Image (cartoon, rainbow, N blue to C red; front, side, top):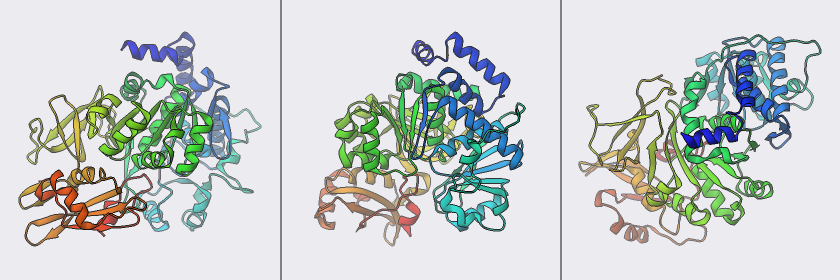
Length: 508
């Protein structure tokens, strides 16, 4: 607790001025996300807040433009308290302004993956009946649809009205908005395939404190002043990274798309200290040039499973700066592995943070013994179930030190010859082969054993690995029932836009 107090004081939140600005923000703005931005703007008005592909804004400018946008959206577009407003955008300044502006109006923010197809977006509209959309310009043909054209606006446009123009255009009259309670923030679970489902949560100052304190106490985020948010803001992990950066008054770099070469240049040129990304992005950065990442003091990985080999490689090249965050859209951030844990147990996802109860149960909903695999359930005050247990859909086990180990998804597990077999375990072994770039393992029907494993492998450039050589390498490293019945080599593996291996496409 002493470390938390020190860091809160260090970032000005526990000073007399900080406490005063917190009180004023809550009184004048209300309990919504805009209050957080207002506090940062008053404490650090000249400090750079956002640097993206098009602009850079100080905290004062970001707050003022977000306020102007809220007023213009309210009076010109009719956005009202409790309406459902979708943001279908990549990472850029207008996304951030829209997020705060909509929250200021007390409307519900629905964050949608802009990688969705036209058919998926129209299906989502039919199911959720959203009141208004803010979208990236490449989606203009979708929003030209008759059902959407009159209730949508682009984030940017060279000549017509847009979020960017509205944010930069304060109203001439002295218009002020009343205080509104914050609406819900909804992220869509799932990738770009299947039917995404909404996971809704109401932002709460008190519910936000435990995860915030965990990151201050164990990641020491208050020490750093620059962060590159590589993971999409429309995902829960990206959103949390953005809000954390604002609270700490950090300089936040955003790019619309992740590209390893451009990201290296960005990190190296600006001496960025912290990066928030998914494991696939981290793998691409290390493969491109690990030396160019020397300015990094903290790497926060989340949003997808971190392979033990990638954790070891990161620590070898960059030292003890890697943190692995585990969470789900429904449970939020709840488990963390520190660099020290990853150095000793690279396959671990760590321990639950303070305020989280993690239960591991069997098929009869009974707690399992130490070392036994079971379904992971999470209880916390900030989950979408508000204190009830959330079924994560993941299989884990716990060791005698209390560290948790991920075994994969419940629906990925197969039964082969009477044995429970977990594809993730085979994936973690296969990626340690020096000629393998990445791998996905799925279950397939088998006449003799019921089910067997199939490994889909992407080789490293110029590697000459073949089926028989791989199986010979694998035999002494895994159990007999884990040996894949089929090994298929591919040039590329399918990933969702969030960097998760797309098991559905692999099976198809």
